[in-house]
Image 1 (cartoon, rainbow, N blue to C red):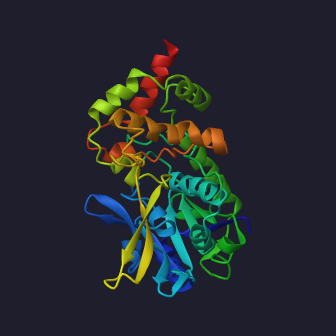
Image 2 (image 1 turned 180 degrees about the vertical axis):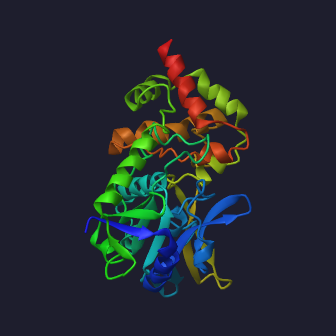
Length: 344
């Protein structure tokens, strides 16, 4: 079975079934925003949502994570986490699935990160395809992430009274088989899916004024652009943009010592290139003193450096950086300004 169908009236029954299989995380409303949270009541799950405040990254790359426990007398170390529990991310947007794919590339690069990879092995991803824009901040079309591009176990598409579910892995197939209310998609279901996809093509339009190869060329040639001075002048260095990004993976390490100073725990904690001391080295030298240099570095880490290293853009088009920016700096506006300058 490649495609299955699920009536919307049976969705809660399926969610209860998933709860029995593994720890279930899904989007839910929090005041006027949305967050990924553990599912306690299936009625709280919300599938029509703008991107959550934090991406689901927090479950496979935690904000604070124990790395090891150590003792100085006698000296010994042990891994802080030896076992990871199975968990399901439900209702993940395609832009956030693209973020997971980016993280896979980074953490599988040598030296591989065992904590990340072990968590990823325990994770099942059930996506939901967006059929309209979340809001005006998204640039998912220009990044090619407004449509599913793999990286999931199951992908749900709303066709009206039903969801069509694309089964993309054995792990996903085990979650939809032997359930009376999930059936193989009929020809009528597949025709409805085709109509929905055709209607979607009229809604999503390119947000950048040029295609991605031109965007890359602009970044390649405009390192000293006045655009960065303007962005740096407006930036308030709050760090929101990197805190909410689904592909930022920088971290720092810290040791938490017992009062005896004999034992301790080493943690890793999210860090950000937008922090004032991020690029400081011994002797006090700072390679990115200004906010313009730090913002430029952030953009280059999305549109230039990972393309050179991994042949992949690390902006997923989710719009979170623009949505949360205290200075109203728009990623779309910044990239288009760079393209305009390059075209002159």
